[in-house]
Image (tube, rainbow, N blue to C red):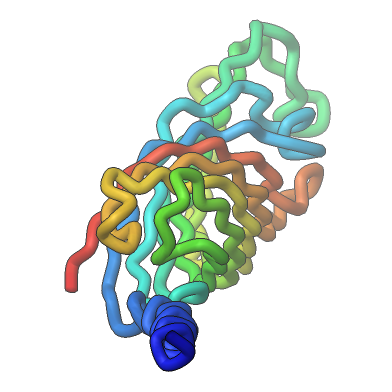
Length: 211
């Protein structure tokens, strides 16, 4: 009887170690829909409208059952139309016109994700993630028939993200799951009255195992 108890204890003691290796080397693709909510001076001076025209995702490699690293990417399209008013174009030159602001941002980030219960049979699995890299920003402003255009080759950007993953099958180490999360995104904008693009992203997507 004592031998059986010792064997059982040894067997169950090995289970966590096997689980910790379950995600090592696994490549996953996460792709989803993202809604952007502008914040701060970016919201008050450029675009106050929520953007429903966003995408997000990442390609990740599992280091172990809790950590993965990879490449994050996204797209967000902000648009704002302001009522007709009088604008100063130059000294002693004014125009009554409608103002349009259009801003697109495409971030590319190095990203790390921590999922403490991945590989277990838990129905709800929280995660946190962080990333840093560059965003390609395109900015257009139209004042009546006059327009300006500014395209950036890359601006410093960073993000922090948290949410939950919902495995489709709790027995398959969470390699296919739905994901819902909220992120904070910062991009150095560099315009005179809005130096940064600050926004909250609310996203939902699907995680697929590729390898």
